[in-house]
Image (cartoon, rainbow, N blue to C red; front, side, top):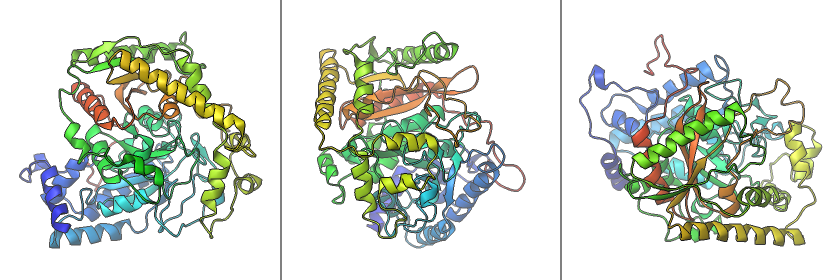
Length: 526
């Protein structure tokens, strides 16, 4: 296996260049290929790479722009880096992610660090196992440099364990939720790539507002074992990255069947040898893409200046899709699409309490064992406590749950029919119709009415169980990122990678935030 890993590492790395000042490794915006190349050509060691990321975290996370993305620094990261350096020198890389520094949302278990779920209730809780996704990343050779801040119990951008996570492009604004720490941290170059969790948009939201690529996979594709659930029929985990290729490489490492999460059995036969094989520069040529123009959020304000600014960017993106060879069906309409997608998502109040209680029962050392006990601590931020209270006492045994499932299936069939009638490969729309909200000064002490803000189009994908990927589409006049989202049929991740990669290659909208520039002084992250 070690020889195979070494071969894969060598084949997947770009051709080595001679070491010279021009070829010197640059940390800011480094891709997985850049890391592989630098390690293989001895431009950098794994320890030095991790140290450089630590330097950026120390400079910008709790000071400077104070992005507040990191919950816990991994105290073993440098030890892991030394082990990987030794392995590379003696027998080759340990896997395809050899020494790729990762940020991991603090919703998944790590046996060597606290797992807080964004809550002060769990600030000292160290699980006795690793989540499957953590184990697979480590087996692939990744270094987990930190666990990231997250909306408390997987909703919003606030948490009693840390406060508010801030947007890397405007720290006065939300980084979206609930994987905001991973999104803002990857945007600020605190690691090479990251992992988020997406129940109703928590990978795609932070990616969109932080000028990143974020993939919500088809639900059975990635194991959730070792992850605190929110809504099991929509919970999934996915990569947040600065490039489409990096997202594909990470998905290769984490996708596939896991006996500990039986739903992943549905993925058998649907996982290709590598998602990178679908990254082709002309991937948009001849693709038929349906445009969803109507806002999928009833709170969106088409008359507002911010909405119009985003729409201008989205219209430009649609023109680029056509320029790059796509055939647009504009618009695609589905009966009551907005109201039904929101109803399906918001109406699922039945699964959460039992799922959280069942999960907590697996941990003898957990500080509390039920959702009710969590709420009775009085520590949860008011905005999240309010939403969690609405699910207490609800159950999948209620007749309303059957109606929820029937409504969900009807919506799914209607979307599939629209795609079949128009012979569509995918649908496309803005991830958000409006920029992220400004963070109130008292956000953690009062019940914020809505942490997301208006213009949220992320609910359709989880409501019908389709994968979706957001990619950078440009910036508003105020310098705020806008995300363009592709959605395809179940297990059509190859289609998403093909379309998103071609769009990325044809537009080049990714730019690092000015709030976290390369470090000066003696630290080499240029």
